[in-house]
Length: 110
Image (tube, rainbow, N blue to C red; front, top):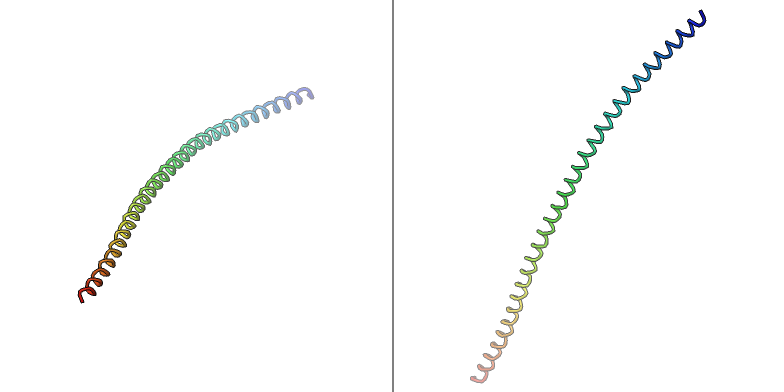
């Protein structure tokens, strides 16, 4: 009778062990699937980050090019203004000189 009871306990323990192994195998499969899903998400998010970084670099390059163009145009306008100022300054000196000659001539005539 004792041997029969030991045999029943052994069979019951083996069944419990098999059930536990089956549950662990199911858990392992679920964890493996979750890991695979997370790895796939990581790949997709890494690609997205790379795309965003590339877009950012392109936008910065466009902004830099726009800035450089604007700066060049402003420098050209500044050169034109400086040239006009120098021309105006020259004509004012010439005007002053001519006015002085006119005065001198008027003094000589009078």
